[in-house]
Structures are given as C-alpha cells and as structure tokens.
Length: 340
Image (cartoon, rainbow, N blue to C red):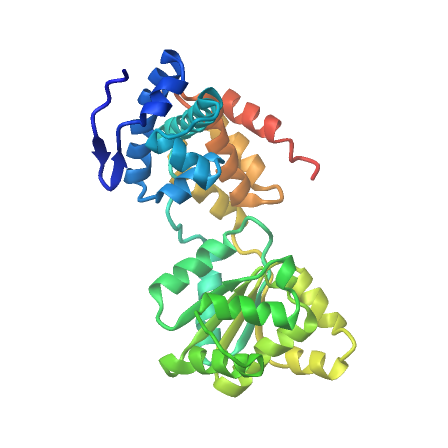
C-alpha cells in the first residue's frame, strides 16, 4: 500500500491516491509520481497558476492532468510522468539560465533617446503629428516606453502585420485602452474621447507604424485634428515611403504630409551611443569592446550588441567564468545574422 499523507502546497491539495490507482500501477511509476507531484504544486503555487493553466503549460489535457494530480489516473502513468518530468526539466534548465543571465542595462539616455524624447515632447506640446524612423536597433521602442513612463496622458499601441487596416488598427487600439462599444460605428469617436479624457497634452504613440496602411495613418490624423491629440508614428523608413505614395487618395496623402511637424530620421551620435551602451554593460576589456563596437555599427546597432552579449553568457559562461572575446565571437557566429 502506497503511504502518502494528505498534503497541500498553498491552495493545491494533494490527496491520497485512490485504491484503484495504487493497485493499477507499478511501484516504480508510483514512486516517480510521488516525487513529481509536490514539485509541480510548488512551482504552480509560486507562480499563482491554476491547475487548468498548469496542465496547459505541461501540454496535458485538463481532465488527464486532474486525474494524474489527484491519483485517479487509470491510464498509462509512465507516459504522464514522463511528460511532467520533461516539463519540469525544461523549467529548471530555464531557471538556471535566468540565474546566470545578466540583465540588459536599464534605459540609457543615449543621444538617440534624447532626440526621440524631444520629438515626442514636440508632438505632445503642440499637439502635433510627428514621425520617428531611425534605423533598427537604435532604441526607439525603449525610448518611447520610457517617455510613457515619465509623462502623463501618453498612450502607446504596437501594430503588427495583422492589424494594418483601419479596422485592425482601431480594434488593436481599443483593446489596449480597454474601450468596448456595442456599435462598431461608435468605436473611433469613443477612442478619441478616451484619448482626450486627460485634458490638453495627450499623446498617442503608434509603434511599428510601418504596418499601418495609408487609410490607417489618415485615421490617426483624424484623432490629432479632432481631439487635439499629439500623434507619433514610430517605425522604419517604410512609413515615409507609404506616406509619399499616398495610395489611391492623393488628397489624404497631402493632408497627412502637411501636418507632419517633424520627421526624425537622421541618426544622431551613433558611435557615441554604441560606446555608451557597451560601457553600460560593464565591458571594458579592449578586444571585447572593439568587437562589440564593430557589431554595433552594423544594422541592428544596440539591439545586436545586447543579444550577442546575452547569448554569449547563456552559451559559454554557465560556469561563472569571465566574458572573453572568444565567447562574443562564438555567439555572433552562431547567430549567423551577418547577411540577413
């Protein structure tokens, strides 16, 4: 008879197994099950996961996980134990990596970030319409999030290819702002009223705005015109290209272009920012600095440096060693992004 006392891990009750369960399975399978169950409960309790969510994370059907956990599973216990063990191994491996993985530097006031904040301030103060199209890896998103953190009445929405139409962009914005309407025709005005609710000086930042089609951009202009809200379109050079093309409506294109108060596209202080970012990582060894500087001057800039350093730690420094150029070179080579 398997001797298991009633135990609990917070709200996770771990009852004695049923008699049929104990009689059905081998002693080895029951021993493994007995070891796995409290480990699962402990992790789930620590992360405030429900039993249903934990089962989904493991990849086990909710009913099967409930039967496994409660000691009522009459199917192949060995298979379910193996599934749980694989998941636990993955969690523990990830936890080990996270323990040695250094955190990226916090927000760094680079020259690019200063110019981005100046541009956002212009849009918010007027209020006006601006575009920010610096190269990838120059910290546009990080700077925008920091601006939202330190300034009141700033809303930020991130687009993606699935929301490039007016309908998709407005619904994405509505979800971000928790706007719900029964009549879809009222959505735009409801969003505009919510944006303007904070009074003068509201700002809407649209990140990854290159995904917005011309009509969506025109809709953002409508917010600026009718509710006196600053709008910043942030993304790559495709934003300017789309505005210049204007789609089928040249009048809408002209309305947008004449309202742009500033287009931040010149890359200020790239070399200084790359060096400052390497310094913020605490890397001073000359050969490492030289190698990372070379990476930072490629496409992707600060983002390339950050990913390469983190991968170097993950792949080669689990033994607590010192970061060396060979680790960075191996990480860069393994990433294989030189020709992308």
